[in-house]
Length: 194
Image: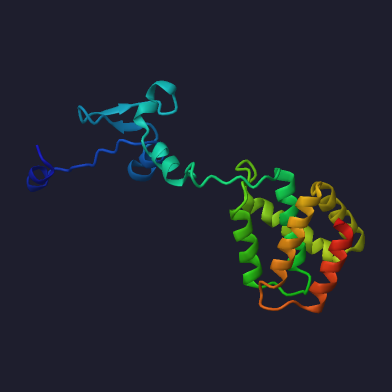
């Protein structure tokens, strides 16, 4: 029986969703219920088990969709602590002139997008922590000294320190002009990192 024939007779029709737990919960709102595409009968499947992995097409589709292709795979040459130190430093620099511009935040986000950020460390959560640390560093000299020493230790090579300073310079002009406070901070950071 076709869908049209069933709906003309007033019978209820349902879509057969053959995908993964995500789609099943999204469309069927049932915990373990699944429609067998061959028989049209409802069956109970443990979709997490290895033997039923062939049922899942959505996760593989999403992985292919969002996976970096081999041609565009990035290799930034940094360790995760170095990446985190750069983000901490950029967050600190964002508060140098006591004004936070959207362009500065966007610059940090675009910079991180170029990094091979470790997926085990969600950037959104790290960013919130980093901004909180940067704000605390602007308010307390003792905390600032500890924060900057931590950044200096994580930026352990001269090349990475140079890259971080270059990014700070770019951040300072991201809002259109570099202020006196930003110039003074850049000089202090040069002394700290050299």
